[in-house]
Length: 262
Image 1: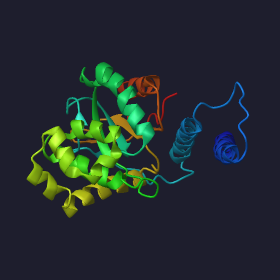
Image 2: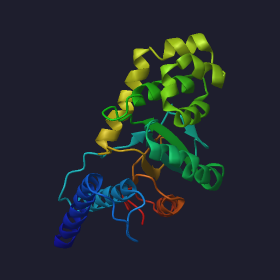
Image 3: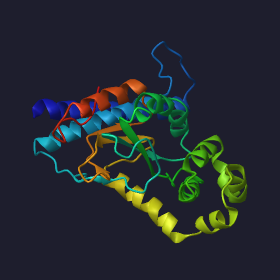
């Protein structure tokens, strides 16, 4: 237990140091070195993932309580892949998040080829608009949900990542994607659509997820429409991290055997 607590303290200190260094770097002239981080936010995302892993170890030992206990429903959400695939990946997305856009254009395409097309993974999207820092994020989530209502989620998903501010002109979105304009116009003002986005946000909070992109991975439960979170990856991640997590999930027979993959 002492070792786990020590590791948790070290990782927390590193996270704080990274944040502090980022602030200082913005206030002082840059000093390029060979070890300069290409993207500090990527490193912070990795450190948050390590914190999650250590927290889950403490939960399993009964030292901390688990407020994320319980299955995560996926029925009716935008998805790609076979709805009977053994592994489910849920991405919490913000359409103004540049790292979400990079993931969509890179790693997600690799996942489609390796795991989604081969019926190993069902890839599900849930919303986490970071309203405090992204002006158009909530409207983007609502517009995407309305595209989903017309079975055209993925085209609007790509369009919004290319230009998040397009949500200021929903009519042009409907025209570009070939949506039924009258239905779409009514949909984006429907309170039930915003309520769905808020429900996704509440699920992210239950899982202690605060940033995007974040990915929840787990094995499909017997009901076929939910999964038990087994792995949470935070921030932009390479395909190798997903592959390691998927392999680990497929090799387990008991939920909660693993929590994150190295």
